[in-house]
Image 1 (tube, rainbow, N blue to C red):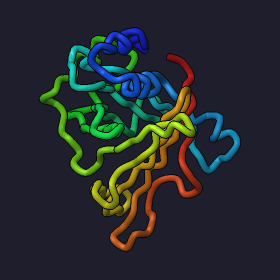
Image 2: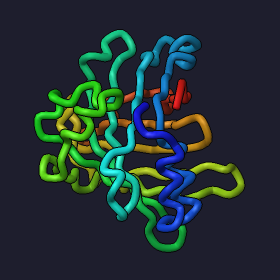
Image 3: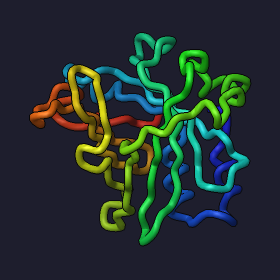
Image 4: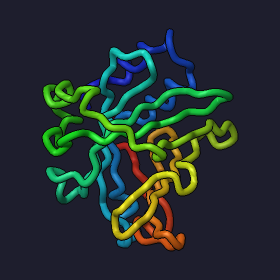
Length: 200
């Protein structure tokens, strides 16, 4: 973890407390080890979300890396997320692919690698943004992608969906792929992954 939560809190004059809380909760390293121990149909996955482009004033940006705990030097997902506040209490996380992402493996713990990523290396994944709302009753941010808008070719899929819940110390995420007929062809079948923060 390179950027402390105090750095994000320095945005307080620009951003609402709801956005600051969401960004703080998303920051850190998370593990699904506890879930995989209880149910072996889930993998032990490590999720790292490190603030990047912290001098920008258009929301919070994160370098995101996901890998099997047993193979962390070969992540299967590397992205940049742009999290910002919309209208009427909505929050959006745009998803960007990184050109030659493999070069930045481990950037979440390597300041030199993290700073080497530039905006012109990013390509927006159209239709794959996650839209969230603050749920006062449960104390969570909840939402997901729009229906059938995020194209995917993984495992014969035609499109992918993501359902997300963010709360203090935990991120709950259910990523699935579907074919043209609407049959699930990828992702967890029983329910979402439970990622517990392991350190800040």
